[in-house]
Length: 497
Image (cartoon, rainbow, N blue to C red; front, top):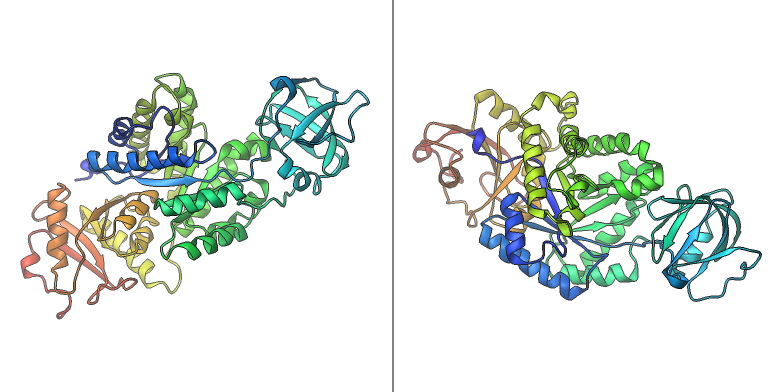
């Protein structure tokens, strides 16, 4: 049965100009897309409203659930608009950075003038210190601070280049106090909640407080808030990763800004530490940025890119992400197909998983974790073809995935939102079933659905976990090793179990 089960690591694809129609998105889904990322740094609400409608329609046509992740822009620290659109900065040049729309007080004396976004000028210059670095355009242009007179500062160019309008700025080593959620983000968040997105990715997270603040805002608007995915890209977030992982629903290793903030040489080790820490707590983790970057313009990846995706799989990531490759590249469908093939090939080599060296244990005192841990062991020892998890909230299925069983995990739930949200977690395939009532023979339901999907045949063994007899939320208390075809002899839930 294993060969018919799809890959366990999920694929996130960013939608954009190359992937916005129902037809284009349906092709991506059939190629292997599990989660559609909507980047709110680009496009207005009407554009995203259309994308969301198209994802849902394409999902229906393809007959596969797809989750929608809203990625908030966050406080993008940028240079402003330059006279003529660009300026050449040479090594040794002195440059005054000043709030856009104002006249620089520190100008003159042969200094070049570069406006920076007015809303962040005070927040950037106040915590900065002389000697700290200021980088532009993903670190391509490097400067060091000579003088500070908030909201202005004077920097000296160490690595020059041509700076163009609105390029990003990074201040590695400067603890910025800018809140994670900008006014734009708050408006975008309300839109996302109204559209029923499945997850919200929070940019430039610093501490666990940023996650708690977003959760509190969402709870005021909805009883069933989407998942929160914390994007780790700032140095502070790396420092406080453990407390962030404890309170977030998911993590995104945003290697682009992270490389500029902490240095590209540190990214691989930080990536491994983040994935390992998430695996230990059963928190889904997405590895992102430039995974198949050359496929923006080429139908094949480089060897290094194929290795990068494979190594993320070996590290234990729950999902891998495409950005420009699927949003604006020339080969979006081929990029998804390529990623799926690399994942499948990597998953065949179980012995290479570094996560295999660390035994993940159930949380002390947790009934559901103990049951799912035991279910994964029992399924392996008995040669079962699947582990069926009857779950209302998805918690039981996520708990099982934490132990990375080789046997397919099938989550049975009556809730469409849970079906989609489980797409963020390694190895889970969800099946929508009608609401279960205590008089149902759940074993017969499980058998029928697995047979329909060709995941089990008569005489196969399956392991089933559920809450008996009430089937209420949060009551997982039972493991059954069930032989397919034996359900007519099975006791019904609610009677003597």
